[in-house]
Length: 252
View 1 (cartoon, rainbow, N blue to C red):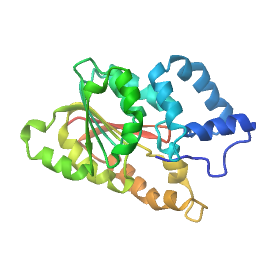
View 2: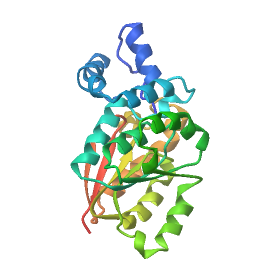
View 3: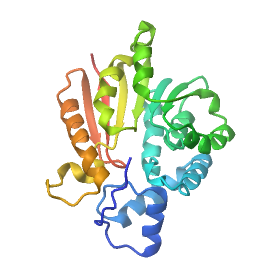
């Protein structure tokens, strides 16, 4: 998760710039005014009150740029409904904005296995999730996801059991996640990998001035994108929503 305001943000008035920084400006659009138009016309008017509350709470967090953007939250919510997902997984939760977007879209008996290394951040959003009446859909597990995925794979009942999986975690492990998740998602199910355009740095020249963490993770994102593009087990669609999301539909 990352902000793409690396000095290239178009000049808007101070109010708009502050608003974007506050909520985690993830848009890859070159025009802040156009992004603000999308938010104010199509996203905010339809944003559930609970998601608005959690977005505003998260905006006060010192790491607020890690949150899923509001337009991506809306996209995930609709995607869950379009594919009629019921059994889902999320790796990388933070305060739970995308988790709430998923939980609200699932049927009452839907389930989300949510994994993150930091329970404290999750508990910031938990009161909002509980108030929204969807906490019963969530099973939260604290700790690194890879060992838990390996344990799940030992039980054949878990193979092909997930309708949708969303990954927004450590980019250097994305390919390790994919090796395991492709076995856990059902044929016809979808895996969504977030930040696959990584601040737009995937097309930056080698000598481009990039923040240290952006430069470090860029190579991992590039390698993931190359691997997904040639993986015969999936169909893919990469979208410039938020910081880039790649949808992988398992076909075999």
